Image (cartoon, rainbow, N blue to C red; front, side, top):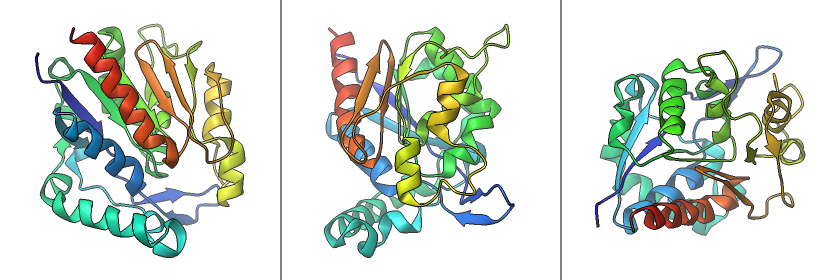
Length: 237
């Protein structure tokens, strides 16, 4: 059985520019990267990391704050990030990625992707090529913002009509970041033509539509990784 090669694309943004121009410090939500990366590596896959410009990603401080995520999770995240620091600090340049080398493209969230990946031309190229070749595409929480970067040769959104989820508008409101947001992700996906589905706030919810796998929120990260592993194993037999 061949080893599957996975590309995790991480936002290079360390902030989210708000509707009034103010800055909200953000980046990658640690659990969404760690839970996925850890499971894929444990499954025996080769996992590469990439970001726009090869910039070292910033982990959202809140995602590592014990008062916000709990002592145990914060410690586990910090420990994993420290032991993988070398990989994380030197991601591949997204613009240099040869999509044919990978079996799956995975995009964790945090508010970073709604700052950079949603309009990144290299992200668009990677996802359009991956979708055309029916490779597994997976994204969680704000990660599905990356899908918004894509257009086909007719200027249409290639993911219109596809079933998907992401952080919901209700969760964004509850998190306290909906007011003064330049746009809301779930709302924008729906308006773009996604068949948007959601579960209860902060509960595990994963949607599979062919090669497209999406998770709703941080709690859905590990289950999304399991869905990616299952999809790849199914393909390798």
